[in-house]
Image 1 (spheres, helix red, strand yellow):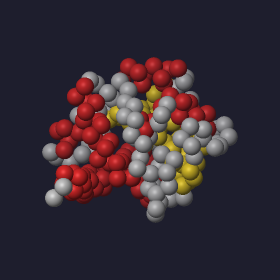
Image 2: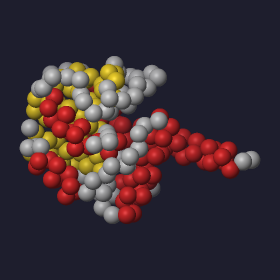
Image 3: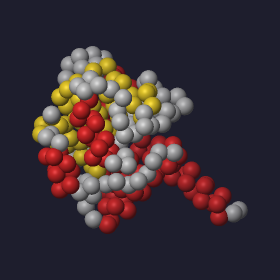
Image 4: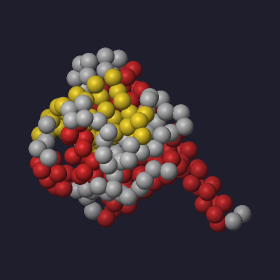
Length: 209
């Protein structure tokens, strides 16, 4: 068996293990947390919605809201309607949505700051971000590995643009965003994966314009 074949086999095993042990729990936990942060009868834009799994779960918990999906790629069978954009300019007018979601999206952007600025522009009130805190070389390796496992098979752009807590705080301040709520213990991963991949690498923030 060639080295490339062996690599592909190992890659497939890792991806299937991630899908079985992590994906369902991750999407359920994140959707549950976000559903509690959304105003009643609100109109939501999810930037970087992927296949819409999280949005579908949010809608099952919050049938009073409406979600529009936006992404640079359109999956073969998305679970919600998805509009394709260039990853830089959001094709909607100012203040078009009550809340904007960026769920593990900004670190995939070529310029996270500019995309977040666009999200602020089209939001009337709230921006909800799920992303990562970079805390040193070891966290960089772990975050890159997590990113690769979850996205390589879907041809997602992987620039690995992770920011430290201090840099996130600076960006929020520059954009005039105040923090209504920040959750850093999301409990996304089951044991024993949480010992390596959980820790303090994740945050969920509800920001207000």
